[in-house]
Image 1 (cartoon, rainbow, N blue to C red):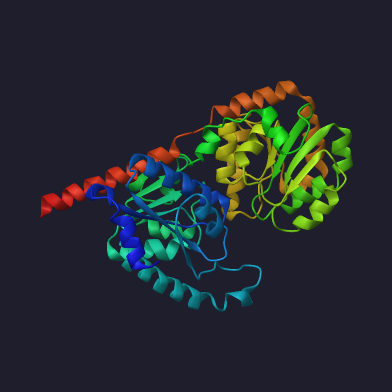
Image 2: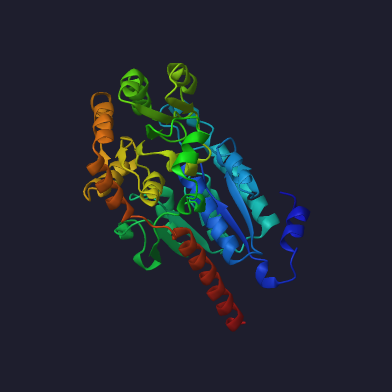
Length: 390
């Protein structure tokens, strides 16, 4: 970022209280990016003159999604540890060193008053630099098992916002605030009708509609089970909105060719419209997927990703299943059980209603506002303390 450009952004108002500058760091997946944007929007709503800069990883989806949301972003030349190919990690130390240099340049130009980390490896050098410089840092940990970077950073963080209780085993209890996970306003304030939403996907408003999502990269087990059962699903009078993810997207698109009951896309941008159209949902059980599905209160079959850290997706899904708020199928059982259970659920209106009512009770719709309020109040308290000490 050019320093002159940033100065013009910051000084566009004469009100010194409005010149607050905050960096939001992290990304890599929609589960990090969309909550970050929700927090940014909440900050803007509470303090319209605030200046927000995102920092992410070059080549990752935040470099596209954040500008679309109306915010500037700086990209770091950084990568995460590759567990599948150790030889690809040879350049990792050099990339990390370069990212720290890039972060120093960003701080020199932007001069942030605070940094918020939302997860993803690009957040680490940004929060580490902020803590080194004495800039207040805030962390949002969306999962039930905290990542190693967040655990290290949490020791010096001003506040750590978490989705659920029991996180004292990862972070200092005095720094914790339970907020839930931020969900986009377009989802919490869903306004489109089912009829209009279904028509926007070119589907039949009289058929039971199933939304299938497995994350931005896709879920192979889910996709393979669906792809091999398209005729069976059509015979059951079900229609699909199938977000395949990037991996093998063309293969799955080819599979669905000729099926008029299937809308296939690598990535559904307007997820709020997809939720409005859906009667049933099949999904991984990442923290943000769970949070959104609670808000939209849809009958859902969760297929937790089995290789998530500490198997936290299974923990997420079990939390709902134990409350009769969702159905769960283990990834290894998807091939045999997913489609039969989906068809059975589609026929069972009583169970659908029970799942909808129970999952709705777990919804949190204002986590973004709570995070924004806490960040701003902490910064205001720090400013007052500094003024009094001087």
